[in-house]
Image (cartoon, rainbow, N blue to C red):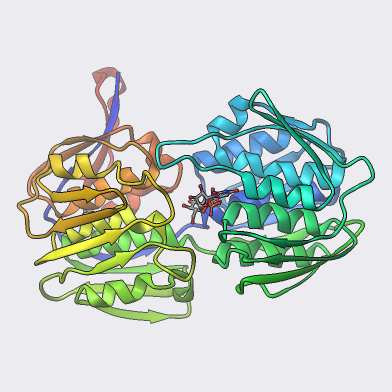
Length: 429
Ligand code: UD1
């Protein structure tokens, strides 16, 4: 038995998509509940595999979680474990972020190293160096980080050599539960970092400078609970906007702050798309030919690497030659071979991709190797002539809530299928 998503392309998309809460904001904010014994409440929580895995992880540490529709209540009255095994961290890389809260609250943690994945080596040296500067004794043995802070962590002035989102999350969480002033220089400026900081402030920490490269944290001996509404998912939203660009039509994404897109909206304008936006929506209309662009990924507010693959898919339909330089991950062109199987003409030279637009894109059977690679195939399939079959849809379940229903609502012909006729499931079309 295998399952797949089937898409019949070249149907213009028109309508409104309600964007879900951001996966990449949900994960660190759910993990931050480990810092307090008090209850934290969340709204706008997306129904995604990664969120379910995070809740499971928190239960492993003593968390009591209750979920109703998009609301989650969690409390961790006592830390009942200090270890995250490789199987937990392998299933969800962000599980590694439990290291800082476990250390700050429980003074000891054993967390498996996440290792590399299909998009790159993804080391965690900055996480470990920052925590060591805060007084943690850190050893790495047999692929496991053993960290202790017998007398508690201490405040520190930490310089990151690259604005890592994960390292900034970890150090923010640690510093929030350490009395005294810590500084993170060269910090990530992503909206998800701001969202975590604002939750930590509600919990009692005093934090200045989020959204800039220097964050100053005055931590507390104890933190309290928080009530949080998750921000809208800018990557999910960007994927729908690019699908509109590839297939044609007019797509509006509701529930997302336009300021959270950084350079991405400028790229859409340069692609000759009409753009309209308000406080919590963006609308893109394709009125004529798509123009090629030159894009370079980078830390926020530069163009987000998570939208690189979906952008490349849309650029296959542009009238001319586009280039994309990937500066965040060394191996993030896994989608290229699959796009080429659909007729794309793309050359890759190390971190550079050259996309020859207006190639005849036609539906094909393709494999989505990771979450954003799979999203790029959906975008390509929607603009292509004929029917595409996208295998391994479980990658999409990690980051796109109700994908088929949302696309069907705006006119896509899309369905989820299972090959065993006994289990046949069909939505959309
Ligand atoms: C987060 C996002 C991911 C996004 C990425 C960059 C989540 C759950 N994931 O991942 O979707 O693609 O930000 O926007 O929010 N690095 C080091 N040493 C470190 C830490 C990072 O060299 O200690 C490197 C990484 O290998 C990578 C780059 O820094 O090349 C960016 O990584 P980072 O910002 O940390 O990404 P994540 O937090 O893992």
